[in-house]
Image (cartoon, rainbow, N blue to C red; front, side, top):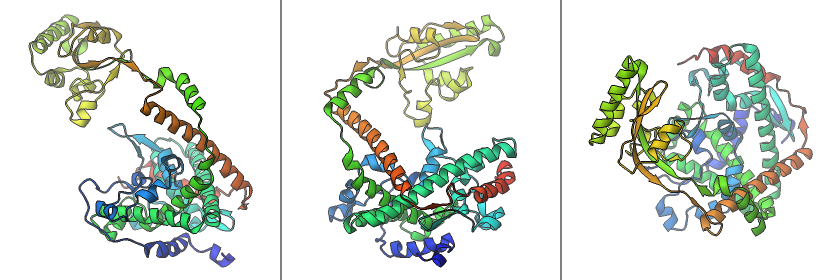
Length: 460
């Protein structure tokens, strides 16, 4: 790349890459019911689903996908996906989802409206890696959702700058490594290996189209609604698979897991990973002293409810109607919340010894399924529970296939992580990174300009 080309706008550079990849697009099919649109920060690192006809014709992605192991796929993320993972939080189902900011596409801002107040720094180069520039707006765009969410929690600009600087430093580090490893993969992978990366990119693109009704236009629109550019994601997906194939071919073969390694791991983690504790499923009703007006009134109400439950009334409905604990009322008495979220009608399993109310748990373990406990008194009221199911624990044997598979995967992941870090340090030492350390000021200035808008939750 000559000097004039190195300073093209990043969108121009991306467009050139997309022309090549887009020309390889496969045909589209109708969207199965189980392939619904999903947030692209979630979809980005998933292996796409190949339609059954393609598999039957020998054109599926099974063989191609198998060329890159789960160990590599789970450890090698794109910079954007790494940012989303780094700044994720649990949803109502306990699943980790990336935080998202309000988008302002009309202002040209993408996620969080980055472009609205940053025109003077859009073209600023944070760092060049072997002559390829990384622009401030690209850095900030990837972390804008996280910064927008954090801005609402940070009370002043000075503290926000510290938060933003840490995020920017980490994101620049990832983008530098992405460029170094991608360029190394281009030089060192043969045509067949590069073809694997290209095919996986196309499968990802085709999968997103299927999930959006078989329409590329709808897939682009879905991305825009999430504040991202579909073509940029496709380009990043191409780079991601090149890096994954590189690590699969050049680093993963160095992994060596011996039988002795596996036995040592098993013995070390026998208690915390391979011993299943006794578990129970039960529901709880609380009658509070404050809510009842007095301790005597609370006890009388609790005894009445317990009698009704023991006679066969629906315990979950009683728990929903009369519980003085707001959480247990919402979950129909299920301490884990599992039944409320899944609609399964059964609560989640609770390990013996892990329930906060030790006296109530002791009473529960004296029961048989479908029995109701006696009242348990506490400072703030009375509790009683109904046991739904219980099961005894056991110690898993080292000879079980599932145990050995788990140990092998864990040790392979640990070794690969170390090998990947060593390779990245080695490659960085041989790369030309200028300036070093990078010039973070333009990206930090953009984040600072956006702070008032983010802190105010503009657009919500």
